[in-house]
Length: 594
Image (cartoon, rainbow, N blue to C red; front, side):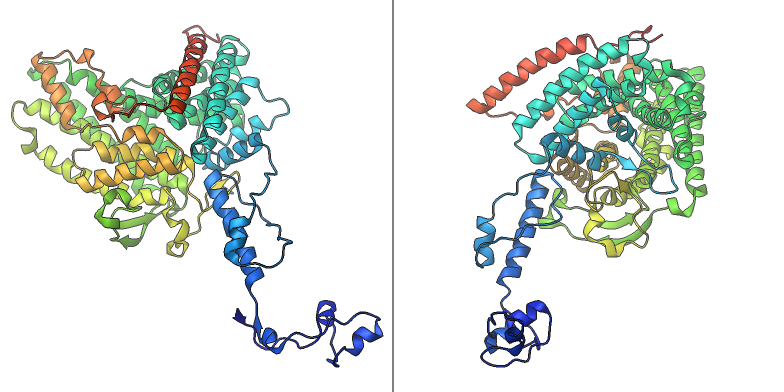
């Protein structure tokens, strides 16, 4: 019951007709003149204190609908139909309210949910987008079957992750994936189809599927998809850059090339000019990608030299040259950050000290400062720059350790400088990541600039799957760096758990099991290789560092499966056999598509 002030004392009929009532008792003259039945007048108490039960019911139904939408991943309906039953309490209404029948098919719901979480549409006047090529390809009059299957596989997989316990959707996603593998394999072998936008887009989506589902078999297939996309781009030549969709796909593959080079230790498939020339989308991001491609080449060269050279004055000069190249690239990164416009700069908007139950893994933001940026894309660019500096620092410290061996490298001036620099970089990453994971969605008053990020559909303020996809690399850097504190590692693992469970990117869960320290473990490997005490070619250390596989010691032992779990495991085994058969035809040979 709420106080209603001084409402009209007219009869209910006049109130409904919105005319002045003469308040004649027992019936008003207005009703008599119009030959209507006067319903009479409300009690004086009801006039002053209005019963809010019906309004409370409506609010409860609306809140219940939003909660259901959040749980299922479906966008809440804009209008909640009102109940026609007599007025009841809000509690009983909420308990008895039926689930609204969906107005969309499951295919439409999963497609819309995927687009709203993974397609970043550029804000007006900018080119800052990601995966936006998906929309014109899927909306084509006759979308290519292999692209459509790959899209449906990703959409179903992501939707099932957000739904939780949606085993039937997960099975459907895996079935679509197997079909997509087979049809994409046939398209790759066709000289015409292999050069179409839809084919390379399908390969990119198959790669994304591995990150969403994070299956052991799929994690090994991630490199196959990425290398395939890179090879297809090379075969397509410069013609692909003449259309917007072609350029968008090329830039996405370029990003995957950088990730692949850093994670595998392999050099880029072509020189830097091939990836940069005539493919400028966002000029500031392109400048950074040019630098990161050059840094990946430096890392490949350093890995080769540090495990193969023996100590000699000539070889020491080679390693010192690597150090100088890395220092030069770091200066170029700093110059890049000093020359970009103010709209690309982050800003500290608040400081936090909240630590739920003293547990870093439960904190949304690491205690300390929290930075805000103009949009998700700008944040990702900044985070990439900082991670690239960590890579350079690792190479420099490794090189210094190799040169001064057997003296402890931690006594060198290089270690003193870079350990302090990396500590500051890690603090910068901790301050930026909350923005990427939607920490400001309920704190909009803290933002002094408008959020320009624009997705294809869905609630703008919610954290997106793409945010989790982007942020896995910086979080894994925090976990693996020697210079991170125990609290920072626990916080980073907690954020990865959040990404896996709440944002539906299961690959993030695997990263929490990686127990690697950089650069100390790499320095130990370099030392063992130099002494000849171990064959480093027999240890796939780069794969462990790239988080593409999980060391067995990091996995927990599962309890014996129940009957339903055994049925699921049997189904997955059958699907795995089918997937292996499909993948056998999904290969990229050197002469494909020529």
